[in-house]
Image (cartoon, rainbow over all chains, first blue to last red; front, side):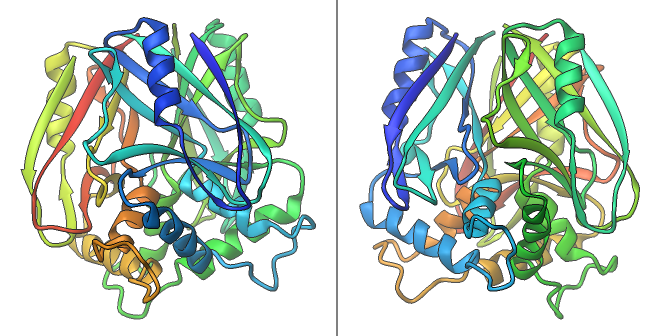
Length: 131
Length: 131
Length: 131
């Protein structure tokens, strides 16, 4: 089964999508298998990080800005080459293990939609595959 | 089904492999499922990025060179530790959702083989799994 | 089938888990399919890199430290925001193709558990899915 979700994103930032992914797995009826989360945008991504400290989400964006700054000699006409690179490197998808009807995550892990060039209307997909 | 593709790469750069992945999915006959793309090399990778502006491919390489420079104190004898790190971090594989007989991609997304230490003869694999 | 592995990690560093993943695939009895490796921790990751030169593992950590330094203005109370970002960006999972009863790897590729904030007792999961 293929699930589509829509969301509104901030200028830059991480949006917690763990509950949406858990709902898709539940609705699929798959008890043991995998799920693939996919972001169809080139200036956004999917990542997994700590789900407790809200400051960490700001640190993530600060770290990405520091690591992939907007270089003066980038030639992409959109002016957002850095956002494209952040998207590629942090990755447009994640594959999770499904067990006992839920995506297998560590106690402190959450699934996040990362916006690098918003704010925008965005979407992401979840595919669940049974064993 | 497992598909093997061969390609010739530049010294550094992104090679569009979207058509090859689409052909593998088509030939597999899988209509709904997933596909896994895998690069068996340690100084190359697979990524997904914008498929329109050719300048962006050069920006990607420039951004990677700037982010992961060849540090003086790297000790790897090959002299290409930076290329190995670029490969690991941008990732040796991608997992895509397959729907209606095609890999599910956003309008502006393409699949790219990234060469960080060419030019060389390279290969990559595509595995398609039905629901 | 779902396999759980435990390991003791160094302060920072790469631990080769290729043999464990190969054993899981073998024990699963799956001959053609995929396997998903997943790390349930937010300051560790899974990556694929060269399996020959031990110096390269130290270079990898040095490169990650240089690329994602501990910025002064990070606000995460744990003081390890950089380790969380390294984990997210290098990725908490890998999906491999399984063929002829083994994970498909290039001649020089190994699978590594990356510790960015140890030393600790850690675990990782392997799920194998047949065609």
